[in-house]
Image: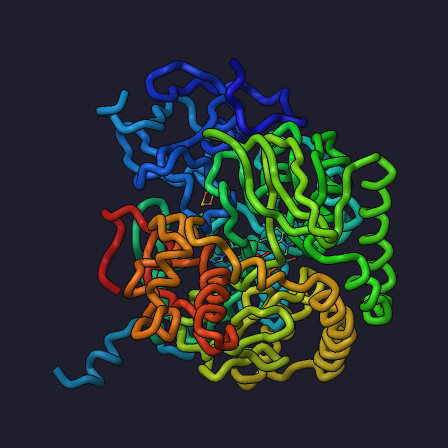
Length: 98
Length: 468
Ligand SMILES: Cc1cc2nc3c(=O)[nH]c(=O)nc-3n(C[C@H](O)[C@H](O)[C@H](O)COP(=O)(O)OP(=O)(O)OC[C@H]3O[C@@H](n4cnc5c(N)ncnc54)[C@H](O)[C@@H]3O)c2cc1C
Ligand code: FES
């Protein structure tokens, strides 16, 4: 089932880059932000810490701080302003909830 | 130790410090260009990886769409600004990927690649731009809801649409421009819902005619959308974003009061912009309320000067005036700085800039009146709707904080409710929160004040933080 929020309209000939989402191997395109890489295949970037459901960012310009995700070996990063790099291991869910 | 020993230990005499510009959008780039032209190479800082700012933000390397595809009628201006920047980049101290997270007297605190450093300054031009102004709605935290500006960044810099069928809701030129850009790029549009009735816009026709080219462009976007069969509704109010776990629809009430629903999988929303003025506040610049835009803005005079010597403002960060005005204001602030440093400045150039800035005012005022902020929509948000997304504070909790015996002012309401204490520092919720508090108190919105900025203006990875 396609869960994606974002849909690509152009620029689809860029090289593919491999990374993992909650340990699942996936691919996105060189030049994607982490947020684009995630939301072209997943329905959210994180769960609200207040239990009110999933969140997927809002402003895409580094202002709202809604899009922080965990990178294994690195810590929390803001997905909308972080470029995707090969081999990144992204955690959308907290470890114990896996 | 005697204090002058400390002063002389400073490796730079303050007078030698290069001017610092924060923000490499239209305002910051034109300011840098003007300073360099006068022989004063500035330090230009931007959080982003490339210059251009919001409107002319560049796509990452490897993308191939041309300027016409990306910027439409503004392609010439975008290219001109990028060319101007490329021509000076090697001759100024250009610092991309650098966040200015605090300002203290004579000192900026920077953060780059996980490291914090300080930068002494004597003269500072803040050209920090703006962000979308939002109104909380039931369901607005659902995945698939983005700001208009965010939806535009998705398209321009990532070549993605925020959904397959997008509902656009809000008011202002960006609403129509963005819907037009999505249509041209092949994105699906569920509806364009403008909270301003068309009669309100028509009433401003004389003022809008002072910039006939801009008016014609705006009208052509509207006409193109209509011709393409896009559902367009004016004078309607959104009621709720619908969906389980993600956006599935938008409920709204038309001008005659009938409740309607649009099926969509994403919503782009926004009601104009608000200045990103946290650094100006930390620099000590006083604020004023702009009643036409219903925004607080750091106070500058038409020359870009502020009440704080050595601190200048330009562009949308000092009041929303648009990209063309930002370019003029950037150059103007740079000339003021040069004058204040005792340098000779071309009087003809000064006069020309002032004339061009003045000529834009009538259009800007008409635009503000043509697309008013629907403050009653914000003030009337139902008690159970989340207003502060960072701390999950509802409108009801906020109202409870201002009930009799409670807070009279937004920063006290913040202390009582935690509203605006989260990661975004109230950037997202402050305009609506002020309307809710003002309505509850029966006071004008300017009387409840504004949320104050704090350093760090954006969250930093803990390791990089040093005490300012
Ligand atoms: C998302 C968005 C999209 C927009 N799209 C359009 C459009 O299509 N057409 C239009 O006419 N207008 C648009 N606008 C309005 C826009 O604000 C102006 O047209 C124009 O970009 C203003 O220029 P500026 O130089 O004042 O600020 P900006 O172009 O916003 O540039 C400000 C720069 O300052 C940097 N900055 C801010 N704070 C810091 C900090 N603390 N540290 C380091 N760097 C910092 C930012 O990264 C940014 O690059 C848009 C606004 C937004 C927010
Ligand atoms: S989406 Fe707003 S900060 Fe990333």
